[in-house]
Length: 185
Image (cartoon, rainbow, N blue to C red; front, side):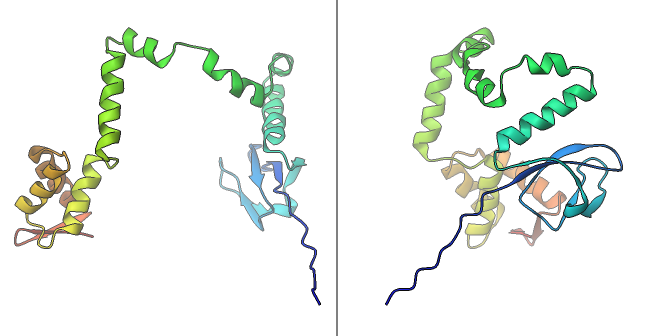
């Protein structure tokens, strides 16, 4: 004998709410116990917040909030003439210069930039130089300056940068140096 439980899908709700203290409008996702105004920080029970619209469509909530803000500023008619967020998002690639045009206009060779990007992707290097230095301090058995420099150099980070990064990590309190050995805090 099989028992089948019926589980109803709970749709995600979005509510456009307002702050009674500063009149800020924002979108709250779900049904939290409390919500806090992003402008003034006033915290209220979510159930007591003024909800202008509740919907399961985030784009609809964004449209309502934008419309309300435009009306407050006296631009409701101009806002009404605009396409929806969804339609405008689809049109974004059709406006402005292409990446290649932008790079060429900035005096850069678009092909050289693309090749450099491919080299970085092919090398597997996805970490920043600073993160590589941090990783070196964590991974090297005895993280002396020379060991950290060697580790980072093998991963394409130059020695001068590594030394400066070590100094900055210590000054910022993110690492310690004791008897020539570094440790990340």
